[in-house]
Length: 135
Length: 174
Image 1 (cartoon, chains in turn yellow, blue):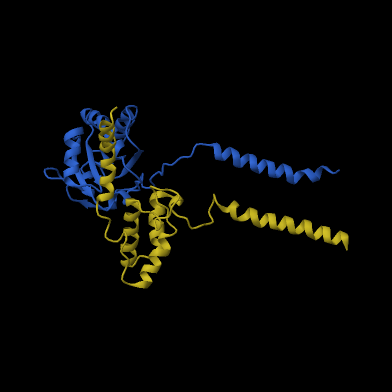
Image 2 (image 1 turned 60 degrees about the horizontal axis):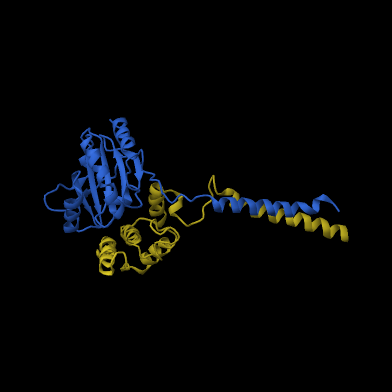
């Protein structure tokens, strides 16, 4: 392919992706709420919600348009008086536990919390026995 | 030397083995919607361009099962699935579209180029409906029964092999 043809080819595919970014962001994607207490609550919640497009970032950290739309949802819901827990469960109902970064003890995650405690108890028991033997 | 000395090493090796095995397993990036089996939440979207009808949750409550296609003109896989939507439409499927974060002129351009299989196209500028039905990307296709209940979710572009599956799910939703 000649260089101009290649450039045209690349551009043809680049344009639709660029179009997604040139749409104006949702009103509350980047705008903070007037009430500092509400904004703080929204910010805290957004830092523990997973961006669905960029799955290793929170929606507070991501510039993906969908993360902006999720921040908009969080802010307008907080402004409307919904509690952060209600918003979190609204999202979990739709996307599963996966959408939340907040650690929660559940039927599948309890070993993560239980095993370290168990290991500490075992280590403690071993140490105790050794010190007793020595004494 | 007591055999017990080796127990921690074996336990550690077993842990490393398990972690290595899990790391080599393919990762499932798809996020299934928890809304399958639930009624569509209330919404009312304006038309995505001139000359088409918008989409409301009430659009689905007339007894006829439909496909709800979440797409966008800026989405490349949506071009790939356009022929499959065309074929679904020709085989009698009623398809409702929701264009996410899109401009009327871009929607019109896309349809002029790739065909218009939709009976209605709603405009979802803030991904509100997308979030409300648990869709995490474009394209995604939902089967909605005649009472407006979400019955099935297809994630990603529709390939030729998915066409009979979707027709079957539509039949099941009847």
